[in-house]
Length: 364
Image (cartoon, one colour):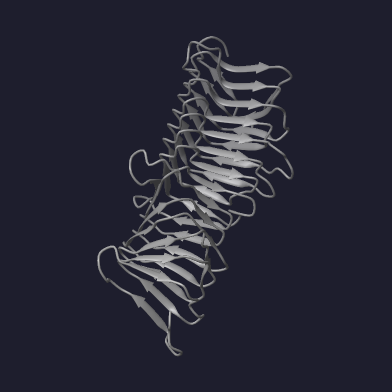
């Protein structure tokens, strides 16, 4: 309030513990704004055209449903810890950058309709049932040994995972991220597609690791990921309203020890390559409903159907279709494969690689 013409920077530094600064005026295009070690309350839509930096100890609070509009840049410096203390919608044509080693604690739903980049070795912490909803793009640039983690802020804080919705994720690249401890799905892709997940660990979530509904318009690639110890399925691919459904490609992934099935598919196109599905009580792979675009190539499906109380198999089809090339289906406690209803399987060799179904407990 009361900024004089010609000022190019506003700085709110340390005042006193738990001090609050309330902004009621626009920041002109040329202004940079720095928030450090105070609670900064915004009670109406707030537009950032320059650079807004939230430094160590800074807290943003959005009162009365205020939105943050970023047409410039919102920046969290490397290794700083900040808090966003309420639900917020972030829109605009600019970028939200969380730099390497930073920690962001989010208390409330976090809706991103701009471009958000999260560097390596960051902690993105959520609580109070909050969810990260992406209708813009999310890039995570973790690295081996310096993975970035999306999880709850404290034990049993109850966050709800990452959800990509219509119009979001199309240019997103999520690499070397741990996505864990959600009370819902780890990742939900709902009526859109995400360019790529690579080298991610999606584990210990209370429903599915990945829940993909109507992957439309282009392919979603999931590669070199570990998907394990989720309460329901490792991956669930689901056709709902349909539309221009495109392939979900699962490449070189390790899917194991989930509570029901490794890969569950309901009338949705998919391709699984060089992946393993192991140690599931029901099925390694389950396909319900027919689509001519179901492929499994050079996959390993073994040590599934571990729940002896029910009839199950390494691979299960109900009115389903599957083209197999070079798969190993072995060491499953019950059947290697089970086909019910009007199901079709094509087993094709490729360059001398044949499917191998062996050493299953009850029947091939």
